Length: 437
Image (cartoon, rainbow, N blue to C red; front, side):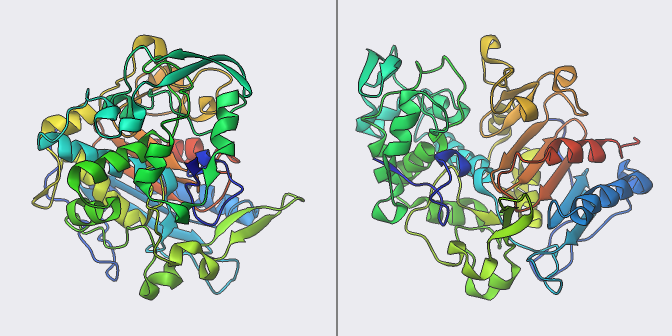
C-alpha cells in the first residue's frame, strides 16, 4: 500500500504533495527577527522603477480577490534588491502577510532532499548508478506495465534496475497516480494513512506495484524523491528530518524551515486558500487549525517542509555559490555543476510535451538533479536564461536560480491548485524585465 504523502489533505492526489563564477560576500545574513538587508537595485544591474511593476502586478491579483497575499524576493550578485510582503496572511484585515511568514513549500522540499543524497554520494557511501534494490530489496525484479486493465494487467520485466539517478531525474518509472492508466489507479487505491508507517515503509510498499514505464524511457513526475529520502535514511542511519536539520538546515541557518511549525512561530504560518463552488477565494486551511503545527510521524522526501522566502534564499544562494554559504560548505563545486546539468536524453527533452500536465509551465526545460533546467529559451516562450534552474510547490510557491545572471528570485503564496493561475510565468517575466545590466 502507498502512504498518503501530505497531512491534512486526504482528497488531494499524491501529486499534490505534490553556473557561473562564485558569488562573494552575500549580504543577506539574518535571523527570523531581523530585517533582511536591502541593496540599491542599480548596484546589481536592476532598475528600481521596473521592479515596482511587481507591486502593481501582485496587488492586482489581490485587488481582484484572486489570491490573498505574497512574499516576493529578488537577489542578484549576493545582494537582495527586492523583498516585500503583500496582502493578507489570513482572511482577516488585521492579519497582514509579513516578510517572515511561513509557507508550506510542498515539492520545493525535493531539491533539499536531492542535495542530501548527493552529500552521501560525496562521502563515497553510494553511487548514482547504484540500483535502488541495493538499499530497498523490494525494488528487485520490478515489473513494467505495458497494457491491459487493473484486473488483467499486461506486464513485462524491467530491462534494467531502477537507479538512484533515475530517482533524482524522475525517469524511474514511478508515478504519483494522477493519470488515467491502470497503474495510476493502483497507486490511488493503495493509499494508507501517513501515521500508519514511516518513510521507509512507504518506499518498501512501492515494491509490489508495477512501474509505469521502463526505467529511463520516460520523464514522469513521481514519488521518486520520497524513495530518495528513504535511501538517505537507510545509508545515514538517521531519520530524514534529523539528517536535514543537522546537515543542511542548521548549518545554513535556515531556522524557519522544517517539517512542522513550532509553537512560538504558529502566528506566522500563512493560511492555505482555494476557491469554492462559486469560484470565490476562500480559506481551505486556517493557520490555527493546520496539521503543520504538529510534529509528524511521517516525514516525506518529496514534500512536507515549511519555510520562508528568506530561508529558501539561503539554500538557493548556497547552490549559486557552488555549494558554500558564509563559510559553510554543504556540497562540492563539481557536484553542484552536476545538479545544474540537464540529465534527460534528447528524446525526453524538453520534459513537457503538448498535452502533458507540465506543458503550460515548463516548456523548454530539461531536468537536472532536483529541479528543472532551462535548455531552450525560445521554446519556453518566456524570458529566461539557458541553464536557469526552477521548481515549484503544490501550494503555489516558486523559486528560480539563474547562474548566468547571478540571480535568485522567489515567490511565495498559498493557493491550491497551484496551476489555477499562470502566476509563475507572469512573475518570472516581471523579474527579468527589470534587468538593465
